[in-house]
Amino acid sequence: MVTEDEVRRIALALPETAEKTMYGTPAFYVRNKWFARVREEGDLLVLPVASQEERDALLAAGPATFCTTPHYDGHAIVLVRFGAVDAEEMGELLADAWRLRAPRRLAAGFDAWAPGSRGGRGA
Image (tube, rainbow, N blue to C red; front, side, top):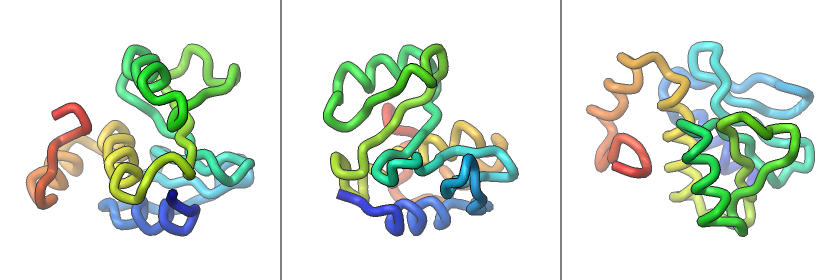
């Protein structure tokens, strides 16, 4: 189980990440593009994913970990339950979301530098 403080630590360790408020809750940005936001409930993290198909696959494969609300219907976004993941998995999820929003050169530089980088969850 991760906490909001651990999410913050992991997210802010990613290159050029800043924390700002979005809808009154902490959100994380890379070069002014959001890639994660803590939901009002405080135990869910909003993350973009690569496609609607990836979203559907995550929801089907991990209903104890991933969920959604009608608000996100039609969007490539999932909600991650803090209590269902450990710090390592949350780190992978945050890095994947960061890669989606980071400029290509920044993401490529990170992947070239990051020890053991897989270039994404599926790689």
